[in-house]
Amino acid sequence: MRIITLLVFFFSSLALATESGFASISAQQLLQVKQDVVVVDVRSPEEYAEGHVPGAINLPHDRISEFLSQLENDKSSSLVLYCRSGRRAKLAANELHKLGFDNISLLEGDMLGWQEQGLQVEK
Image (cartoon, rainbow, N blue to C red; front, side):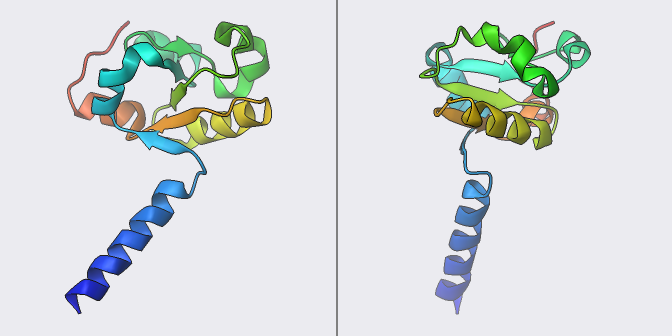
């Protein structure tokens, strides 16, 4: 019975991880590979100004075409997207994928998770 419970947990976790179709990255993993990725805050400019992941650029999810030049049209860049809680990051990831960006990850826990871990916030 214990093995069945573990298998159910494993497969349900796997389904959650792939539900959005994008890879996820933890805050700790991001801190280790930060120089190799472009961190993208997809919240509003006002939210971004209140505090964001250090080094992140702002690309509001509902204005991607206006802000797309910030990515320098490098579709091979490794992007890590986040918002406040995850919904807008998924929307933005889908839109960027349609525009030809293939290397997209979502930050686990988004900004709320980042702050809960007591990690540095840039203003």
